[in-house]
Image: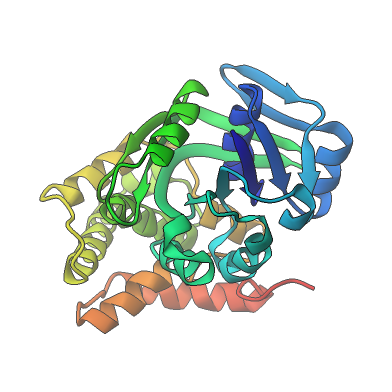
Amino acid sequence: MRALVMGAGAIGGYYGGLLAQRGHDVAFVARGAHLAAMQERGLEIRSGEGTIALRPVRAVAAPAEAGADFDLALFAVKTYDTEEAAAALRPAVGPRTAVLTLQNGVDSAGQLSAALGAEHVLAGATYVAATLVEPGVISHTTPFRRITFGELSGAITPRAEAIADALRDAGVEVTVSADPRTAVWSKFVMLAPHASITSASQTPVGPIRETPEGLALYRQLVAEAVAVGRAEGVALAPDAEAAAMDAIISFPPGTKTSLQVDFERQNRVELEQLTGAVVRRGRQAGVPTPGFDPLYAVLKARALSYGGLARRQ
């Protein structure tokens, strides 16, 4: 399989690395120090299962440098870069290219469809704990790695099955879904509360859920996110709230979210695509979000204080 990783950070780099290790022809699109490190030293993935050292790797600054007509474009840029990255990806998308988004939030499939054509887009959600610890080095900190994805049409197509088979061969637990929108939302109703409260508290999940008020706030935020999704017509399962809380309770106590880490590092943040998305969609659907509203206000003020909602020059 010829694959292009659009956004070779923690998530894209991790899954792209697994595919490359299994012999697939993978090109990585990255930038800055991470790009330079991969071009000079390759890509290293560290986990409890051992270290994968990929040397050399094909790392480029723009998709056009990697060629065209890939079988798979794994789209894993930060959500605030979606429109710009989709435009850059366009020259590399051929008639048979499937663009699989594994981004946070619930907006990317629609944005990519508008930019590249819905026929190319596969909507997906991933559950994995991976971090870019230094340029060229990714740490995979827990044993699970799971992806659920599907065609926007709901069809189970040969191309979706071929991508799933390649990922399974690389050791990933994969489900091809006939309702990927619900799969994406099922993650979102857990992630948006989790990212919001850890970022506002500036602490990992353990101390929050061990505090009665913190655990109660988690439950409130999950319920609000589920209510917003259902108001938009998403077919969330009857036990969606319980499933989200089970996931939150299962995380190791020291677990941090990527939004929390970006706030800590004073990076640009996905606030509008996570916390802000619940608030915005709640208003549009007429669903109150009294738990999310103050957290969004606090986090927005924090982000604005150091430029976290704008691109750094």
